[in-house]
Image (cartoon, rainbow, N blue to C red; front, side, top):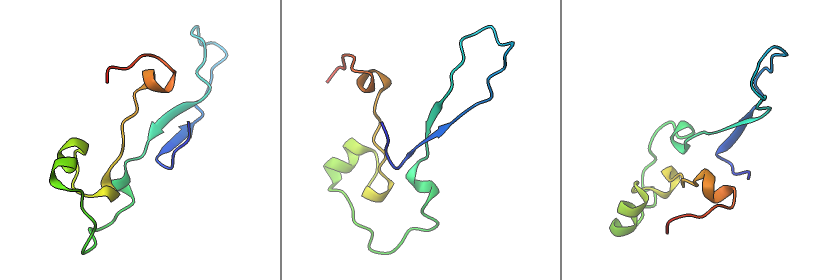
Length: 77
């Protein structure tokens, strides 16, 4: 499960923590963090597809993958 937008983080694990440790945590860095300004003539999705994806510009699209789908569980759709 590695995509260019996913990052991992290894938190401190205390020897006195009563809960089982989570050795690696994952988070997503949205694409707008890497675009300082909006360039001219940026490609655009067609209007209907833009409404489905939630953004007009493919460069700013970040797909959402549910944890259930990643783990192989059932999804609705």
